[in-house]
Length: 302
Ligand SMILES: NC(=O)c1ccc[n+]([C@@H]2O[C@H](COP(=O)([O-])OP(=O)(O)OC[C@H]3O[C@@H](n4cnc5c(N)ncnc54)[C@H](OP(=O)(O)O)[C@@H]3O)[C@@H](O)[C@H]2O)c1
Image 1 (cartoon, rainbow, N blue to C red):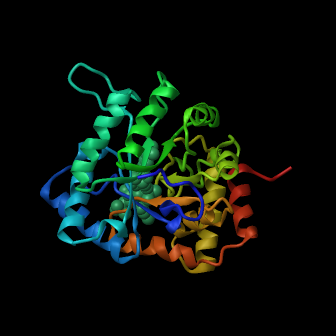
Image 2 (image 1 turned 30 degrees about the vertical axis):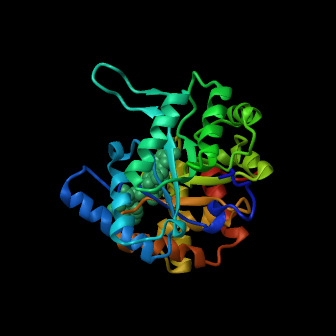
């Protein structure tokens, strides 16, 4: 199966929101898995059809639960768009965690993800984090083998710098389709570090992980000052009151308003919050709202 070119035909662009499956298996207990299955049912009922995975989420249990979800609900493969990731090896015995973009690791991980998910191709495969020992030609040949075998349709990266993307892209015979980074009201770095402009220039879809960081919980990469935190909280609450919605919906409306058509990845496992995230799409958010949040976070503009 040929690698699909990016553009309007890309199945990755069929939706503005992605459902993130990192938390669906919880601690792996039966209760947690029941809760996760309910979350998947809620996401499906709310209209999600793009799903984000990684081989390491609950050590494969999230992918397995999703495979079970597809099977028990008889969901046709073509109705869902599935991304998974590879490239992180978790600590094991005496071996500390490490990044691995070797050909064998990429190929073996995809085989295992396909088995876990009970599908025969991934719509998209991302390299989860940039490997310090990355050899772009090795990744390119593994990607090409997976594309030629019809096992992966599109490829992308996560948490890369623009330079690392240029390096990898130069070795690939097809364009990278997606870049997944932390992007939220606290961690706005993609606006200024070249990640967002690069995605727009190359037509890569920018996906935001932890989109509620700084509102529902502290961002992973937070360096926010106390003053900025207070200003941001105040402004988010003011906008939530203005629109009669939840503060978390303002986080999503802010990301969705950008012309780059950023795709927030929704990670809640709570049915009500999953539904609320979809309602964020209907907030008539304005340029003025967007800049009020920006200046609350960063201070007045020059
Ligand atoms: N590429 C990467 O490196 C990377 C890294 C991290 C994540 N991801 C992807 O991004 C997805 C989303 O990440 P995420 O799960 O952190 O996203 P998120 O949607 O920003 O956060 C979800 C978490 O916030 C909690 N939450 C939501 N609303 C809340 C509220 N009003 N008050 C308190 N807690 C609230 C949720 O709890 P409830 O479940 O109880 O609602 C859940 O624990 C993941 O599933 C994964 O697919 C990718």
